[in-house]
Image (cartoon, rainbow, N blue to C red; front, side):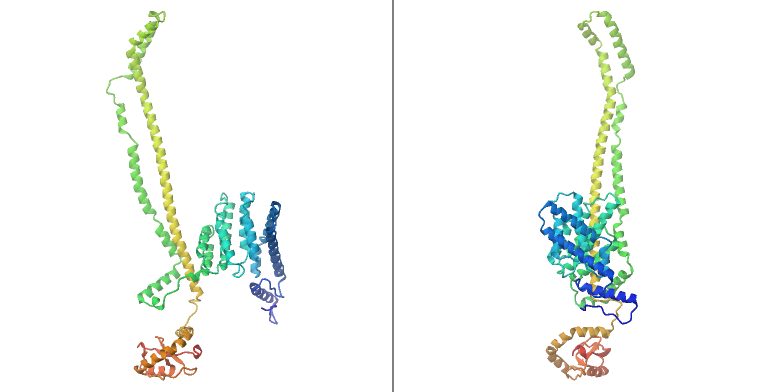
Length: 544
């Protein structure tokens, strides 16, 4: 790598500055320690700030290693807080990345800080403090720019485990009582998803795909659909090599109707971008069906309620088979008792207990009748009160059943929603992986290849195999040629004596001169007998 930036002799000052910046970005992307001679002063300052922040975090990591007391621990926390404030000030990451400057830490130092903040179980701070410590680690990981060679698989494993253990930070520990709380949750989720995308380069073996996806979906609901799709496509690109290998050519060269159906499906996928959304929601939208079921059971429930809402037997309470006028009987009995009380004072001036007992016996029919009438009149209210208590008891029981029923319905619909989301998530990810695989193979409709281009590509790739197989096939070709009507010279192919490819079958068993003469006589391949459009000369450089 050169130590300076090459510039043309004559350049507009603004163009010259832009070219310098572009080349600086390229140089810095290869080595953060290499600085070209020509740099924008602003970039020089920003690069120096980056190196200073790195040194501050490295010093903090060293202090953590020497930490031996609570006072020291508090000092370290203050230093981390100050360093994080500087790191997050004025869009540091955006400014560094746009200028090609990389903020990085040594793996050992980064792990030391993460463990200090994330595993301080002895720290007596508040719950809010612990959450802030975890968020500090998240912000630190977010600001770092990971490279495949910078961090080991052991660090990747630790970072992934750390995120898995603390994914609840943004989903449960943060309240959602206000718009500000909700924004904090969304910001935390967005941060974790960004970190996951950065960590992908550390998964060199591509063996953590399932864990990465699980963490992604744990937080995806708190980011927009556009960001979900973008981040998911980045994950899919990294793991696109995990797609099972394709079958042979025959798998795609079967029946013509199969090809037509396949191409039709491609056409639909290109044009109709909303059909999946429409069809999925159409399959889920069974409002009318559920309405019919609900109405059926409501009708049955109403019938039960109607039957239980009346008691025909209560009508019999109003029927009196004994002819008794309650009011007149009660008045008559009370008048008799009153009269007996008046005369008893004259007949019993000495208040004899014996006389009083005799009077009770004499007036026993009246007393018994009054007692019976009193109980009978209270019976109505007592029975109604009991009915009201029974009605309330069963209303509460009905409410409890309806609550249980609702909770069960809730479980059913939540289970359905989760199962549907799992299917759609799998489809989304597979879609991104398949499209990433196509892009990786550099297949694009914008690039047009002729038949000769494809032929050259095939022969160029298969040239080595053809040379190895040529010796083994020579005896077989000679034997077959003796029985063939196709006359060939059997001379060795050279740069001048070019090999011919028969279009469209692709056989390459003769030189171009012999193949042309034979084709003019009889336009059929001597091996497969297919009709030949024309022989095509193959470039000698494909074989020599």
